[in-house]
Length: 401
Image (tube, rainbow, N blue to C red; front, side):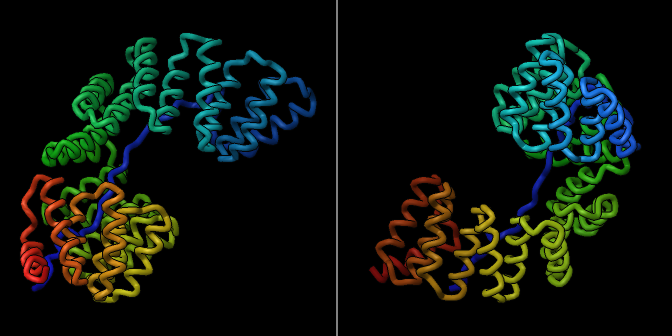
């Protein structure tokens, strides 16, 4: 009996975009280094100049020197403890540093000092979003919209919160409001495309990605996501063309490398697929998905040891989906004990469909009673008949019991 492996497939990822509000009192960042020098001189001349600290902090922020920016904003607050702009910018700096709770605390101070500050509510909402607290983020975006009914970013961001809460219809309503306010906003079309895609409406998603690209021909993520749809449709030439365009626009885009590798892998152009996964890993050694997908190519090439090594890395990086894939690889190596252990890990992660895989491995290992139990559990939990590729193994388990 030959095991059907159709479930061992590659994974594509879709990204969302969030708009962040500008720094309070920020200036053109094209001369940020010169501004640092300028405001340093101002501070040396008058160490109590609050605005000089804020302005130098803005210049550091524009240079992505967030710790230095934070120090200047905090010094401004030492000099002026009720300066709302300084609290606002502290919140932005903490956002960039990934300290979202501290960002929220500072935005909360801003809305206490200036209750009509729509941007502060918007940014606090984004910090809640980054923490996965979507209900609270929606409340803040609603307040921002109440204060400024034409605040496009707040509609987009509330849409993102609805989207990640699984309420795609409400997300679409918000994106369409943003489109109404600015028909030339490519991001609104892009995000609505994401919502349509997750609802299973690929043709509508495709139209939105096309519109986003029409409005912004350099929108790399739109090319990437359109490429995903082309790949789903089996149109690999256009998929690869879109991923390649995304990489032309952003040569550091590990997502586009991984997704183009997926398309090459589907075409069994394994050398090209490996080259793309290798490049993704070279750019981001912590990109677990690329290790998982490269392992799948090694699996298809029967290079099982290399596949196991990549799955080990992916799992070490927290990519728990790889347990099932590693289990399949161990099974192909006739290491049924290790396969069973990996399937068990996958089941504990909530992947109930893996009971069928474990049933097969238990059958091959001669654990017939356990195999029969796994097959029955699969049908009981999923409410589905056992997959065709597992049926013969169940009969073998019954015969060997």
